[in-house]
Length: 537
Image (cartoon, rainbow, N blue to C red):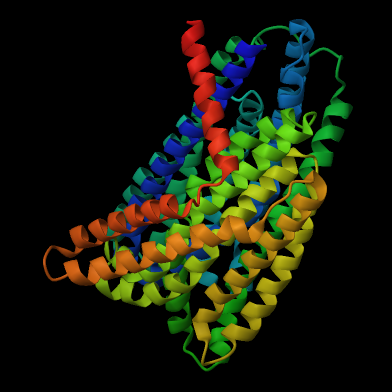
């Protein structure tokens, strides 16, 4: 039993490590795709790209948000069955049912996107975006197939194939997206057509990610004793579908609410900006600046949180029978989330323009920096939301994030409609409404976590010391950048300033005792497991 626990701990740590590395590489590939495209196409060209992606994201969430989580939870539940024959048969059944469900969802969703591309473009009041929407439609089919296996692997706590497929997918998107866009530029095609060529590269990348998952399947199945044999009738298809549906439906609805909100927001922003008397081309340019510069940078910090949430779902699901242990894991994970997210929030807010200038032309960075400074305030709330979503899903309370999402989406759309329609606020209404949205959702989720799990979260204690340390971090980074700017190249000065800010944060955190006992106990537990394993060897 002790060895099993150690093995489970090692699998968890390795899973987090693999997913963290793959997420970092994925984001790097994403930057290497979007930065050259943005510098080449400018705000307007990237607006077509991101309008298509907003539609794709909605279909993607509807198709893939809930089922992988449901498959992971169901797989984790049966992966610990002592009877190897029964375990293998049930796991095969879960895999087969999930795969078939995703196959249908991907085919239907991709066809709807392709056929409905002109309609979606018209709703966004940008008809030129239709080719980009059609070009990204095949990606939905490929990503659905990959997601079916990712959920199954996650339930087995086998994260390496997922990590490799994510990197292959991101690398394919980067390579083919830039290649297709460059070819279109050389032919002198319009910006909307160049954007469609770049979007087509995303579909090729998703195809590569799917291929990796399919290639890895025989090896994973053999390693976990699931290869060969029949799925049998021990667990009927109807029962599997029912279990998947009960978990997947609220998760899917929760995720699709926000992606639908983003798509509706893309329609609201341009319409409302034009309603203030702004020229349509200028409104499109500002929307492109926000989505191509501020949003990608805003999405970078949470990549440190997402691997942890993915790896925690099967761990918490397996620990539900031990309430005290489960509460300790939840408290430690939330404290760790705050410790990671707060310095990112403060640092990105005050260093927005220097960070953007690392990647983008000076004129583009100058336009996007004020938007990023405001949007960065939502990093903390987004990180807490991601962690609490994973906790509630693993505890079998997946319907509660849906309630939070519905409330947050209503706040987002109302605030966006009111603020962007105000000429004095304009495009800043979009990041402000996003901050309000994530803040409301995170607070609602925290309430549900405390109510449903019984965990005692001392919010002020959890936030106070890390927040003070984060302020020191931001002030140090900003002051260092001002001092170093005239003494070394701008890129080097920015990087050194960010590092100094991080060192200051860690020093202040340790001085103030900001690392709570729950996080320290989790770390020392891991060390004890490692020592025990070494002694046994």
